[in-house]
Image (cartoon, rainbow, N blue to C red; front, side, top):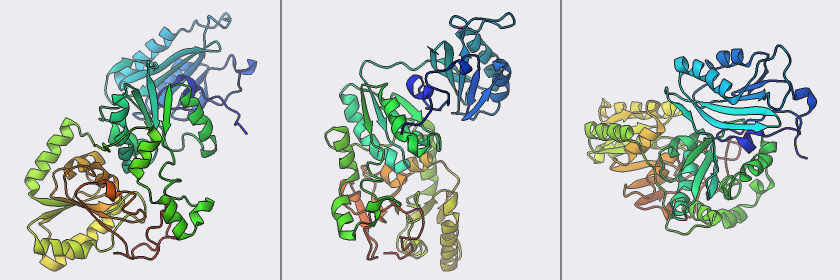
Length: 436
């Protein structure tokens, strides 16, 4: 059953898809209501300027603000009402943004007698008025997921640009983060976590597709199709059935869905500051192994890191750089303690865990003598680069991932359930820590 609601943001807006829940079409009860919608909070306002002033302080960078105001050209004015035009709204925003950061006008339209405008908060003082406009040959790529998922989807982008498409790419925060410098993307659209309920996602995608000449929706192309999800019947298929059905290449299946040829073209694009930082860090570190301690899921880690790193320090002249998010701190502490117990000091091991951005770590990985880690974004960032890699597989088979990479050695778990081709959000169906 189609939900009751009006996807204003999907038809007229770029960059959010926020939902204003009013009847469709707008009924008389809403004709005189002024809406302001800021970061998923909807307020009715007698004075939209006052709310605009108050909300601007709390909208985070990247957040969206929607104004929905009766336009006097389509609605009669009472004696005490003030004429409202699109220029009035823009000027009011100018008066607030000059002191509190910049903004970008993403959408400006008239809908059912109302002024409908959308701004996105910027982190700098720039003022941009560039409402969304469909290009003559415009395509949307949709790929939610983690950093590695977005990087795998990047493989199709050069081919789409070669076909003269203007490319808009919609993703969650992780995808927007790693793809923000990709030269093959004309527009990045951020879908916030929890922004659209799961049961409404089909209508969300349908509404987006209407804006473009073509849509390549890669949602659930890997997770769901080639990696089974808990709560679905195929999660409990027999192991041989899962292995037979799910052993295909993630990258090649993505190319197939996008209807683009090979070869594969995964690439991460750092900016100038990230390059400068990585070159400086690599220079002061000397030849090093970049060791990624964990990925985005609980099963994407390796229990033998302390022993392996102690042996590498003993048998090579390479230093070790540990990387990971804040949740990897216990793993880093265990390794540092093991190294200290073995050598008496840890001067050849540097921990960047929780200290650098994922983009900086991906850039640094290009300078490593070897990159070691589980199925995670950093490994994907150098998957087709001539950097030696040791991939610690977990739920994927080599045919899913490493068979398409270059200069890679894939280590497979010894557990009887490998490869399971399953996503894991708890340890219920995954014997984590069993090792290789």
